[in-house]
Length: 451
Image (cartoon, rainbow, N blue to C red; front, side):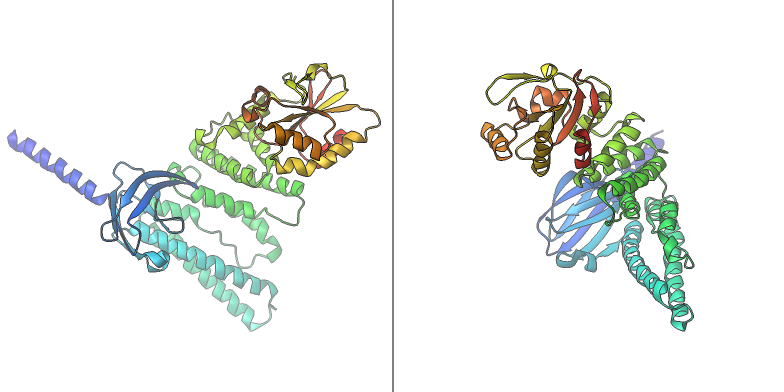
C-alpha cells in the first residue's frame, strides 16, 4: 500500500512539475526597460494581467490556468510583443530597438508558425496585388503576361502550401485553427478584374470558423471583420449610400457569427465600437434594431452605458409611442412644459455648447425655424450644459430664438435619463399629443420636417 501511494505521489508530482515547466515563458529582450506589462488580448480589447520585472533583460513568468490565445508583453507606448499561449510555454529573444526584425523563437512551434504566417500574409498580399495590377493592364498576347501569370500562380501555391499543409500538422491546435480561418482569400487567376470584388464579397469568409469560441482570444474575428468591410468601402459614395453598403456587410458578418452566441456577441460589440468611432449612427441603430433587440443579445458590460442607452432608446421610443413629458426652466427660470406647448408639432432637440456637430447644423435649424410662414413647428432645445455662461453664450452666438431649457445637470439630468440620451445632437419630432412622429438624424431629414 505504501508503494502504491508513493507511486501516485510520484506521478502527480511529475505531472505538476512538467505542467508548470511547460507553462513557463521567457523573453530575453536586449536593451529593454526593466519593467513590462503583461496583457491578455480579446480582439482589440486588452486586459492587464501583471507587471513583469526583468533580470538581465530577461522577463520570466508563467500562464498556468490561463486560456489559450493571444497575449502581449508591452514595454512602452511604442514597443510590444504579441505571442500565443497554447499551454506549452515559449522562449523568445530579440533586440529592443528592432523587435520584429531580430525576433527568434525557441521551444514553441505555435509561435514560430504564427510569426511566419504574419510575414507570409504581408508578402503574399503585397506581391499578389502588384501582379494582379500588371495582369489587368498588360496585353494578354505578350509573353510577359504569361510570365507574370506563372509567377502569381507560384506565389499562390506557396501560400496555400503553408496554410493548408505546413501549418496543419496538428489541425486541432490553436495555431492551426487560427491560420486556417485567418488566411487571406485567393482569387482564381482567370477571374476577370471587374468580378474581383464580387468574388471577395462572396467567398472571403469561406474558411472562417465562426463556431470556434477560443478564437475570441485572438484578433481573428476583428481582423476578418475589417477585411470584409473594406470590400464594401467606396469613398466616392455619399454617406447614405455608403451606410447601405456597410449594412449589407454587417448582415453577412453577423448572420455567419450567429452559429455561436459568444462569437456573435464578440463580433457585434466590435462592429458597434468601430462604427461608433467613425460616427456611423445609422449603422449602429441598424445593428441595435435588427440584431441586439431582435435576438435579445446580451452585450458585455465593458461596452459601456452609451450602447445600453442607445438600445433602450430604440426599444422604448417607437414611432407612435408617447414620449415622457419635459418640464424644465428656461433662461429666466420660468418652467417650460412640453405638454402645454400649443404648436402642431414640436422638435425636441438635445444639444450642448461643447458639441461640434450641433454647431455645424444650428445655422440651418435657425433658418428653417425663422422662415416658417406659420409657426407649425416649435423647437424645444434641451441643453446638456452644466456651465450656465456657456449655455447663454451658445444661445446668443447662434441667435437661438426658440424655447431653450436646461437643468444644468449634464448627462445626469432627469430628462436626459428619461430619453436615454447618449449623444448630441439627438432629436425627436412629436405631435401635440406628445406622440413620436420621427427621430430625425440627418440634415435632409430636418429639411423634410419643415416642408
